[in-house]
Image (cartoon, rainbow, N blue to C red; front, side, top):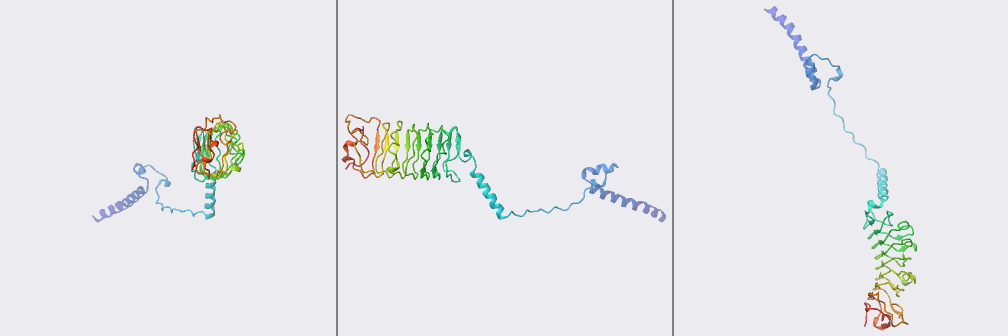
Length: 290
């Protein structure tokens, strides 16, 4: 009996060790390969899964301050160089550049087919001869609410289609040459002086109908074209009128039919002292009559 048990022990112990080792190897193999091992298929050692240590996360060192500043300057330059239609709104011939951020200090480069430009409430300081040189299609320019103190004399000379020009709420002391087809000019709220307006600046504009020069520093009324319908000269320093200012002193039958409204209020001027100065007008000027 003891001999039989001894023989069985020699047979069972090696079998148990072999089975345990086989099972351990299977646990290291990929799950999909375990069943294939059972059917006697042989695999090279490199197919068995090996325990891997977790990788350490490497955090890059922050870039130097100088590089950050350089990158910031580069970004600012790129933003400043953006095409106009990315900074403004362009809609079929119209360009809207109102209160642009970052601050717009010069007239932007415009698409050549631009007809209407609205660049109000920016920080534009000067208008040069090159700003509109290639944009002959412009009919309306609105530069209200900028910081314009200078306009080069030929800045608008090539704008043969320009009909409306607004320069109100700027810092102008004089006006440049104006295009011949201009219908409306608004230069209210500037610092215009009489010597800053040439004698023939308006006289040659035979289509000019609306002229707004209120809230300036004019001491006299410039020569006005026959085409004018409305002229605003309120809140200036005008002290005198002549019989030739609006009428023709030597022609008592002359009537200025086009002129519908004249504003002279807010000037150191008593209109009742100059009755012959507006005898040709269809309605009395607005102003002080004591």
